Length: 79
Image: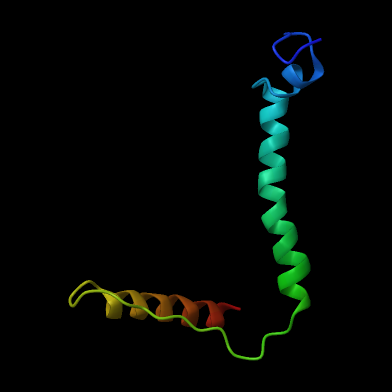
């Protein structure tokens, strides 16, 4: 039973079957979620979350910030 044998276990495991693709997709998507919920959530944040809005002059940074601020304000009024 060689590597090139189509009936070998390794050959069957590495074939692009729908089941193998689904299992691979689940593993690839679940590892970052697991790391986020277990490791990131277990550490406490010592600073407030912040971000930098950068871009060229006239690209709409202020408009975007105004829109986000209006959406957050309307959600706080409704909530």
